[in-house]
Length: 219
Image (cartoon, rainbow, N blue to C red):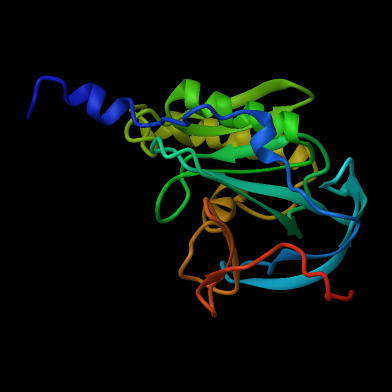
């Protein structure tokens, strides 16, 4: 094994000039494609929902459980795909993970761009992990510095931190079991129907990137 093995496996998150502006989702108030969660399933549905807009960008709508979701490419190419999600239940803040099957880019879901960006940046700082953010503060995290997906901590310690994270996320409104596990499959581009990737919103059945909004779409 080469002498620089530690850097090779512990310095794997390279976001290439990521900023909160990369999470902006241009659009107008009206019908938009939204990833619809199905309870206890990793397959998703496709919803066409009326989505609000501010300053020319589509926004989360907590009262209707419409959140923003993004995949941030972590291998230095600089790609960011942004979409919308329904059924997660988050009412404040953001959560992010560098465990995101199969490419293990960073996947983040949130109620606002600022908290989402902070969660992504904290994962970069940790060089991998699971993160919970609210109102501009990192509430807690599980570092995963080995290839961005593995912790060096003993299993019992990891389990205790996971329990703490899931309790925090439940306090932010999420009711689904194992939310970080659920989140990790929302970027899995081989399981129908809609998934989010670093290239954008993917229609898995048609195997193509599709727009969030169509001019002719109707709710």
